[in-house]
Length: 394
Image (cartoon, rainbow, N blue to C red; front, side, top):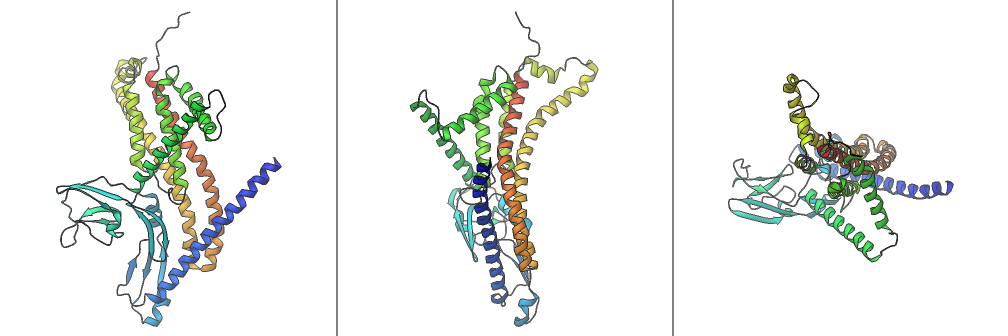
């Protein structure tokens, strides 16, 4: 036990120091940028401006030698957090000074003039119009010749956004991982699996023996491929979301459109496989007076549609909340640092400590949410195929 504790400490301390150094360096760089702005942007003609990182600066109409003292700066933490957990048309890597290093993603638009395909870098982070379109608050909008937004334009946006790109990468990774494990089983017949194959085997057995079989019953094998797919899909994307740099950082399972599609799949499979007993309990509730059917039948039907809604919201809310909490702790460094430089240094220690703690919690949540979604889906399948009026023959 002591040896294990030493090993844990050996890895935790360097990890903590690295994260602390990154937070300190980020705060230092941001502080230098603010200091540079207060001296070099004296000739700004506008009284207020907001840059892409959510840093808002206000200038009073004072002489040049007094403007830097009157300048007020604050961090728009809410905007920064929403930008990080939201979708985007490029993959932000880093910000160096006032330059944004990012990977442009393909923009695919279908309008009356045909299909338009180009890279999102053509928009220049929302500062340029390209082929009649531009980025406005993170969304693509059509514009008129005079630059005004054309609200009457109709087009379909099927672009490869950040979440879509992360989704494709996770699917490729998942397919490569499973095919590699299958190949290892094929070549190592009769021998115990090693490495990642052993981990995958334990997870597969866990889903089969602890989720599918107890929840569904004898017919569990029919639904096992789907349950394994959503478990590994959610788990992999949850882990991807915890990586703060490329190819991680996308909030796939925290996107309600993704969770909605997964919930719809579960709903369709449950509805399609529902037997007579399942539909009988919904449309003709047994064991209750017929006079109450008027009340019970609508409640049962609402409950049938309520199950996928609960699945959708639970996964979306839990994953998004975790990202917001972590980003909120980091935002505290810059909020307090804007008040006082040394106060920012002190708060950074507490913020990084809580961030490290929350990251360990999020690792548990990544597995737990995949397990809960899979378990609830299995329970719904179990109610759909369960036979309530079977007679045992001895």
